[in-house]
Length: 76
Image (cartoon, rainbow, N blue to C red; front, side, top):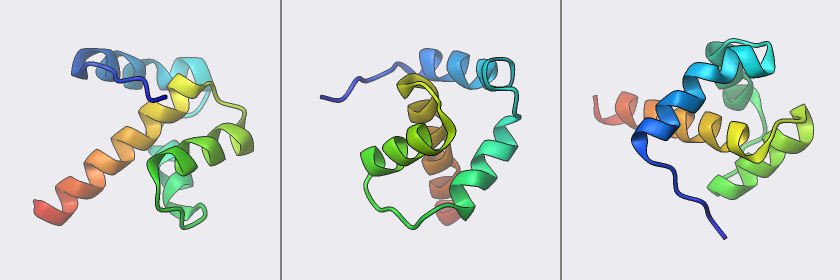
């Protein structure tokens, strides 16, 4: 079951990532970029959670932001 977040909720979670994880968002995005070549969103979320002990919400926000930025680069 997927939990959908509003854009404002997503922004709030992204803004809190450095305080709640101790790492900057740019570090997390680089970690995802350098991580395994997973295709499905939930696979990426599961990998990030397991490899870095993040909550589901944190991992989902990071992967969603990664995908948004990747799409913006492609269509920018």
